[in-house]
Every structure is written in C-alpha cells, then in structure tokens.
Image 1 (spheres, rainbow, N blue to C red):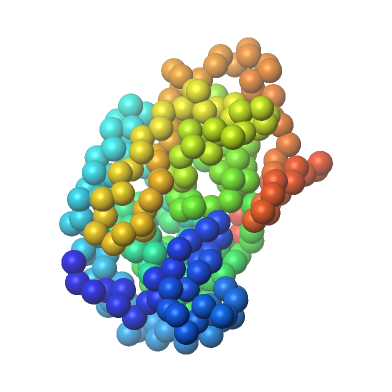
Image 2 (image 1 turned 90 degrees about the horizontal axis):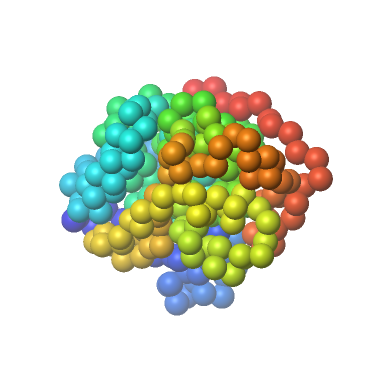
Length: 276
C-alpha cells in the first residue's frame, strides 16, 4: 500500500476523537489544541490523495472480507443495502486512523452502489464537510445523539464511539419490524456488555438475540479497525411482538464521553441535511 497517510499524525481514537499525539514534541498539547493547530487542507489537493487511498482500500483483504461478511447478512434479509449513516468518524483530514476509516466508508458506498450516505461528527471542519460532499456524502447539520431510524436496510458505522450512540440507534429502531434493517459496525457488544450485565438498557437486552461477526483487524495499517464487529438483528432471532417486557423501550441515553446519563424526556429530531 502506498504511503497515503504519511502527512498525518498517528493517533489512538477513544470515543469521539483522537486522544494522544505520538509526536514527542506535541505531547504537551491538549487534544483540542493539537487538532486545532493542524493546518487546514486544500480540498482540491487532498481529494486525489483520498481517492488513491479509497482505491487501495477496495483491494485490501480487510475490506474484501468485511464486504463478504456483510453480504452474507444482506442475503438473509433478502434486500440490498440502501443507506449509510456514519457517526463519530473523527477529524479525518488531521488524523491517520480516521482517514483510513473514511476511505472504508467511501469504498463501501461505491461497492454497494448506495446513493445516500449521511455523516455527523461535531469535530468536522468545513474542509472535511466539503470533502464528504465531493465523495458523494451528505453532512447532517443536527446532532441527533444516535436517534436515527432505519426504514430501509441501513449500515450504521460507529468506529469506537460512545456507548450511548450505539444504544440510541437500537432505542430508535426498537420494533420487531425495524431492527432487522439495522446493520451496525461498532465496538463488540459482547465485550461492551461484559461489565454491564446488571445494567438494563437496549444493548444488554439485545445482545443474546443479535448476531455478532468480529471483523478481524488484519488491515495493513495497525489498529485502524481494532475491536470492530458487524451486528445484525435477524427477525427470526427476535422475541415475538407479544413479549411486552422485551419490547417496552427504556429511556434513551444522553451522549457523554465519560458516563451514561438517561434522558427523562426524549424526542426524535427531524433529520436535517446541510445544503450541498
């Protein structure tokens, strides 16, 4: 693979964005200072670099195996993938890992010929939003806290995001008719719930009914896709509609980087898209 990310500082993502800069002279800086100090990119010059990385991603073993795994689940649903929702991607013009994850999503969109790819991350710069539009994506102007409905088969891509975001996607689609449309790539539910068995929320409730397929991190760039799994919710695995205890929704969760806060009142926000 060519050195497509050579100008980017390698960082480790935790929750919303990078936490640690590996360049020794930058270690004294705070996360926000480091990311804010990164020079903005020229969209026209950056575009061919990202295009090259997308082409390389399509040929990688990691991508090809992930697409095969996803297709097997789509075949069970007997319906094609129609939409992508990507949350918490990170500042992909400024960090190495987020750049490769962005290339994965663009490659996936092209592979499945998907017209609608929606993105949101509060850290996006205007140049990053413009790059998303250049690569046929759309940026949501409103933070819905993971409350995104799946009326059609939808891939949700949440790389190393807060627990509450994953929870709220389930919360929003908590119906036997809708959950099968949810295809979620995120941190492993099995791992996440190991210390939360007594906590009553939608992830701990669904974990024994979902199918989890780990996406083995054999990508050439180390730790870009670590600990990610594809989660699906086949209708045949879900409890019947008359299981009132299971299908009664608990409270949505407020997205917070360090703890979970339940919202007493929750409402679905209308999905607003920035004009192209």
